[in-house]
Amino acid sequence: MRHLLDVDELSAEEIDSLLRTAEAADELVAAEPLLGARVALLFAEASTRTRLSFEAAARGLSAETYLIEPASSSMVKGETLVDTVRNLDAIGFDVLILRHRRAGAAWVAARWFGGAVVNAGDGWHGHPTQALLDLLTLRQAFGGASGLRGRKVVIVGDVLHSRVARSNLWTLTRAGAEVWLCAPDGWLRNADGHAALRLTSSLDEALAGAHAVMGLRVQRERMRGSAMSIDEYVARYQVTEERLARLAAPGCHYLHPGPINEGVEVTREVARGPRSLVMAQVRNGVPVRMAVLAALVPAGGSSQASREASRTLE
Ligand code: CP
Image: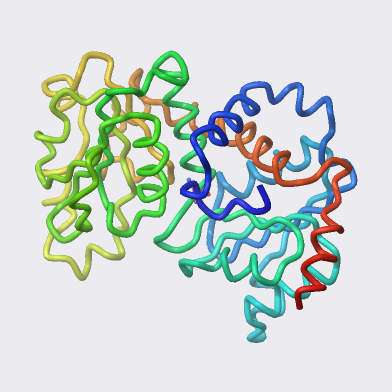
C-alpha cells in the first residue's frame, strides 16, 4: 500500500490482512514499526473519533505526531490545499492523515505528497478507516471473517451525503453481506445493477429480518431545505427498540459511526442498549488505524525513498 484513499482500492485479501493485524495490535505496538516516522494530521473539518484514534494509533506505534489546526494555519490566509501539502512534504513528514470537506481532497494531496496519504474522510465521498473498523466490529459480532456472509445489513439515514455509507458498501458487499440502503425518497442514489445492494424508502421493509442496522447521522441543518421535517423523519425512520423487536432478526445489532443525534435517527434505548456496538466500533478505531499506518510506513519509519522518487517525477 502506498496510500489509503478508499477501500475500493483494497483487495479482499488486503482487507483481511489489515483486520487480522488490527486484532494483533499488541504485537504491533511491541514492534514499534513507526519509530522515527513523523505523522501530520490535517483535519480541515471537525472530528473527535477519527482524529484522536489516528493520533493514539500513531503514537502507540512510536511515531511523532503533529496536528495542524486549520484555524491557526496559513490556510486562513488563503493558502491552498495543494500548497499546504507541498509544504508538509518539504518539511519531511512521512504520513499525512487528511480530513477535508471536499470529496477527492485526499487524491489531490496524494499527487503532491511524497509520503503516504490516508483519507480520514473527504466530503460526501469516502471514509475508508471507518468502513474497516465497522467491518472488524461486525466480524467480531458474527464470529469471524466468514460470519457476514448472507447477513442482512441495513444502512439507514442520510445515505446520499454519507461517506461512511459509500465506503461501507464496498467492504460489506465484499464480505458477502446483503446490504440494504434505507432513506427517504431523494436521499437515495440510484444504485440499480448492484446485485448485492437493495434500496428502499420503507424502514419496515429494510428492518425485516435484519441482522445488523447501521444508523447514519441526520444532518439537521439540511432538514431545513428538505420536504421532510425532523418530526416526520423521526416518525418514519427512527430506529427504535419496538421496531427492531418486531421486525429484525433476534439479536440484531445496532451500529453508528457517530456523532449520534439520540432521539432523531435512533432512540437512546437502542444507541446505549444491549444491541449497540457503537462503543465497540470506537474501540476498534485505534487498532485498525494502527494496522493501516503500519502497512503504509516502510520498516524504519521513513518514506524518504518514495519522496525522492516523487521529486524525480516532478
Ligand atoms: N465516525 C467519525 O468519523 O467520527 P468523527 O467525525 O468524530 O471523526
